[in-house]
Image 1 (cartoon, rainbow, N blue to C red):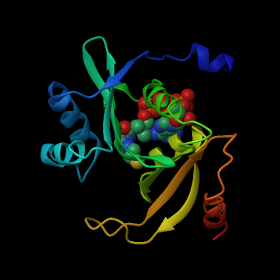
Image 2: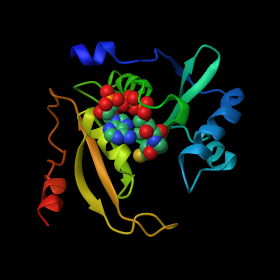
Image 3: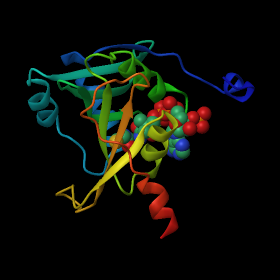
Length: 177
Ligand SMILES: CC(C)(COP(=O)(O)OP(=O)(O)OC[C@H]1O[C@@H](n2cnc3c(N)ncnc32)[C@H](O)[C@@H]1OP(=O)(O)O)[C@@H](O)C(=O)NCCC(=O)NCCS
């Protein structure tokens, strides 16, 4: 940790499973974070699936961030993730990602994946800062805006599985164009 980092204002959050009572604060963070926001029904439909997990970050009594992810055989896939705008750049997102990384294991789930909108530079930079790599471009991935997505992946350093894609440095390729 650099000197700068320790001097910077940080918020320490408590991370726990999402419960029904969190929904109003989660929806508020969702609506303030995304142009094409999930509705309450979208959250509930997703969380009814057996492999879908909701996590929240709490500061005091307040839910300041949430993450929805799916469990797959070899990976975790992030479906939705936001920190309330008033609590950004305070280390909340990185604490949530660290929690997710702590759930990986070198002989079972070794990767975390997600799709991020091509226009969402803040999230791309955030995930890059947490050692995620851009793997692939998914053309016209979003039905709402027609945007492309970048598929980003985090992979455990001691991952020994063979069925994983290697990252091609697509972002560097774009920078050259
Ligand atoms: C992406 C998001 C969850 C990050 O949460 P956060 O709590 O603000 O992130 P952190 O404070 O933990 O940031 C950690 C590091 O990520 C990078 N980072 C985060 N936000 C960034 C931004 N807007 N621009 C550049 N780098 C950024 C920085 O390196 C930062 O460290 P620093 O503040 O010391 O420079 C938050 O910006 C958000 O909710 N965005 C809207 C919703 C969204 O896009 N979700 C992701 C969908 S794929």
